[in-house]
Image 1: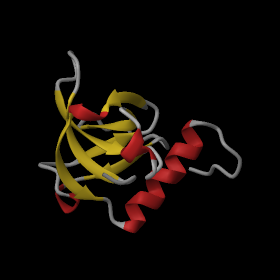
Image 2: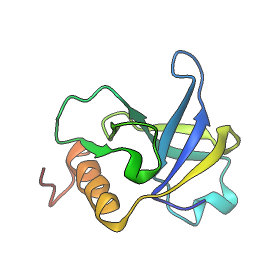
Image 3: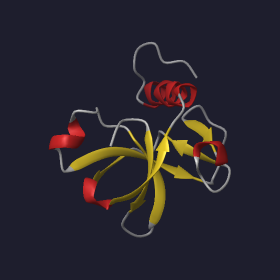
Image 4: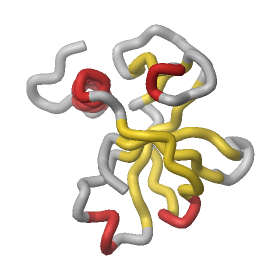
Length: 108
């Protein structure tokens, strides 16, 4: 497990099984039981906190990762890796995360 990877997760209802992007720092995966993720959804709103993803990233269809909806989940709910985000997409996720959290230097 590494930051920027996309995984299938079994989340509590109503979310259910869905893909997520791992956001915790890499060192956390070896020692923490809870990890920070951002859900991937097909509900596209075209806002600065979303990053488009799709089949190019191993997902079944066009979707977005929503950085407004960060959540902490038990690591054991991550069931199957989909793959790492390409460097450009990971950079876009980092920009959207900075924007969502109103961190210095955030630009849409």
